[in-house]
Image (tube, rainbow, N blue to C red; front, side, top):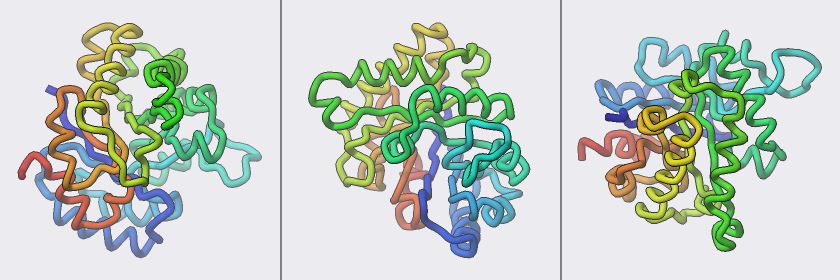
Length: 251
């Protein structure tokens, strides 16, 4: 039985004072919730959120991480900095990092290896654009991103990795893949991972869905066989939306 994992990606929202207040309310609202929960504040907000959640079961994640240990990389944040700040999970390969900042599969793979070296859990994001989907390249794109993203990673390390399937065309648009379409993509990802690492690794892999997840669709998505959680964007910014998403199984 795979334990559901719901993560909230705050993106470029929440100042340190806003994040501190929100995290405190979130912790209060989600006490004793049986699913795994993480929130990913902006870099500058991480310390305030870590302080509030230090005795909570809610993990603090980073939205990104440099692919170098240290050095002359202006504006970047190293794994050691994140570790020292109290981060335990890093999100890598988010579609916005790929599309807006030109991150390639090779860059994502380098970051993933560095994250594993520093003993972070990783959420590896994969997903196709609308053009790629409409031209029949969904499986080709997903296979490439999985194979290249996980290159050089051994099967034992896979226990630290969650895959997040985010159809790029559904992120922040209000559009959502149908539960069946999302489940089919998740099933394909699991098949690719099985080909790389075997059945037991594939069956234990947590695969999140990310793409306009909201209270009104989370139950239908989570009812699917291969959907094990959600990577939530805009809906993770308010208690009114995020709490019902996290507690989907109680409704």
